[in-house]
Length: 168
Length: 300
Image (cartoon, rainbow over all chains, first blue to last red; front, side, top):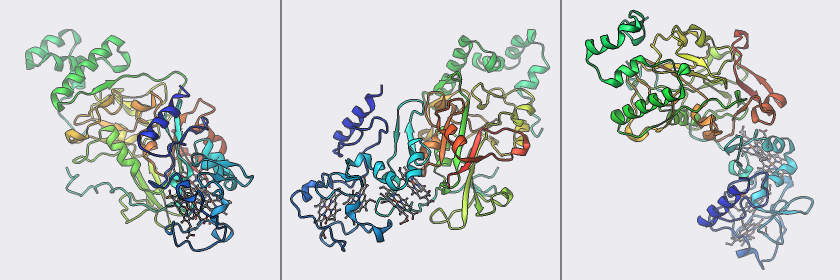
């Protein structure tokens, strides 16, 4: 049973044309495909052969929509993204990880939250609580570039007792 | 009691069982199913075969009434389970996704009466103790709103449930896995349980429920989300139809912030045990000695 979900997820990812690195490595923390924009992956399509510019700057040719609001005074893109192979993220110890494991990246600085996440307390797991479950990645809820949880529109309130849609 | 019409129960009380069958037939000429329903045993005293018969009867009557094929489950409590719930008040943003998912999953009447098992209270920050000053009709453009916190309340599945004690006909009881259930075929609508509950965890079908054909969830449990009728009380069951097959309750799955947690209190590796052991938890109105299995906590 343990093996089935990754295979299913892989099939699903292929079926939808999404990146297929989804659930493969970490049986321990199966996750749905990361929420990357359509068509952006593999990053190597553009970045392979492109010169790496490590300078902090305003991006003008691409990714203009990305505005860092995440301890941005002390951080730049290549603290998280791997300069050489852009299809990978990079940990401080130099290890390369796939986008399906981005929780490892976040966990480096948010250790307590990462611990709670693994136990299913911060964030969320879906599926069968005694059996096969799926973890939402941090980036399903937090934009890594601007991670503050964004306000949303609430569902409608209940009718008040005097409301004619609910009056006796 | 507000309703003086004869009910099945007080009618039964005035008759001796021996004469009953013939009498009912003679008096009303009613159909076989109606009689069966009338004579139905208490759910907990039924044999498996009797349960099957009841389910067949119900599925048939739902088909006639709603034109839909319901699957009415009677899955029993899983051995060694005691369900517990955790709610992280430092994450909840008051968006009511839980409340609406609950209504859909559990076939609650949508209007006249509009019945919801979850109320999301909005409280001024720093004023948590004063539940009386809460409000649940708030409707801003976006949530969360600065200066407020949100506290969803639903049946707290008390280990020591006052609602069960006051029921005059044992139509509501605590299952072995700790869920408080209602047998709608046994409930007489007296509403003592509603008055007894300190959490406003129960609601009353004061009219025939209204749900449009496309809205029905046909995957139901006898003790949970099956169709209700006029004059019965209903409440949250931690989604008994889902929990007993290992699925998270609908509200847990619907929450976009991950504030809602669910699991087996007897399983040391469950989410709920992690919360109780690692977070500061509290329960509502602890001084009532109701022993809720619903734990609120602050993760930060």
